[in-house]
Image (cartoon, rainbow, N blue to C red; front, side, top):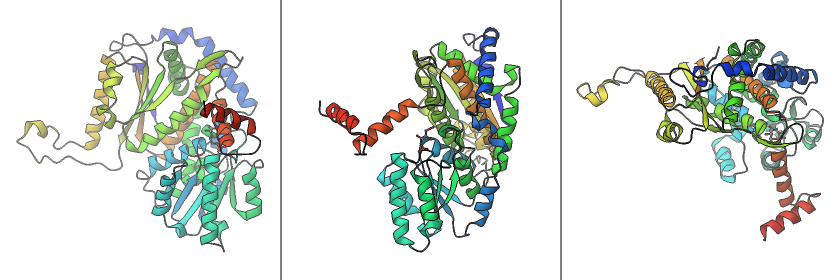
Length: 446
Ligand code: PA5
């Protein structure tokens, strides 16, 4: 099970200027009411992600088992919450779990990127999974139209078997397409928002296809949900980390850096980046007052970014809270051979494992940050496994909605994203958006 080390988020002999432990007591009432609000939201059935560990996954495993063995690749067409979880899980586990089938995620409208994917895969051996909760996002729908056209031309007899639709259970245009074309389809539940949906069909189908143990993911999530019920906040990582990030935001630490010391977990940091940014970045509080809440999430990679970012993190503005992701046991490792025993500048490395060097560098960075009075935390993965990823996903989802309550904002909406979507429709000539199109054109021509 993952472990959360919070000691460098609280003041200690090395970090005298950090938040004192006594501050947690001062906020006990606020924490209590935030927890009660979460309970009320769960009762009102708007936080469906909490209940996902209990879902029945047979429809996913049955579907994957029934697939023709020729299918070696799945290309996900989706964006934001309909894409990032798929990437995070696949890239975390593809080597650690020795996955046999490949998952590609096309989450942009970059023509060269689409060309590269289509050029790399064998179309005959590929399934396309179109994921969009709304069924109307321009990025995803344009990819859907291009790919379906290609499939219809190349496989007129059985193109229906090569495309899967994951969308709302009844709403939206794509649901109609499912009936008219006869595609296999999966559901994004009503009560689970896009960026909280990785443990629904949205992320579980591509995971099961690749060979990830999806029930282990859900077991890990269930365990973390149990931990989040612990009353003592010190023993409760999602709430403790949420409260401490909230307190640091109040002190002007407006940046949250997630820094995995593992390439496999880099996309997990990307998934977190969306969750934290889109959920907490809000202009208004729940009463409609302007507050401009949020904390900018940044991803960095250890050790790579020690040679790019750490100078700034240790000596630049003290405006960040840094979270390391550490892996203890690695599926593959190398011993550095002592091929230059006579050279003092190199022989200290000889005989050591690469993972030992990696984790020593992480600890060294942590120590340097403490010396510079920069708060930091460490989320430890004993190994990168489905169970540990499920737990980490649930931890950050709970932490996010809890922090939203502390900030007094709605962590489930995204009015800023909607505004951009509407402007895109207007610019691309969608009917019903004439007024917005005129406004944007006059802005463009000013
Ligand atoms: O979290 C969210 O709601 C968003 O990031 C959506 O996932 C994203 O905008 C894609 O939306 P949709 O799944 O409707 O295509």
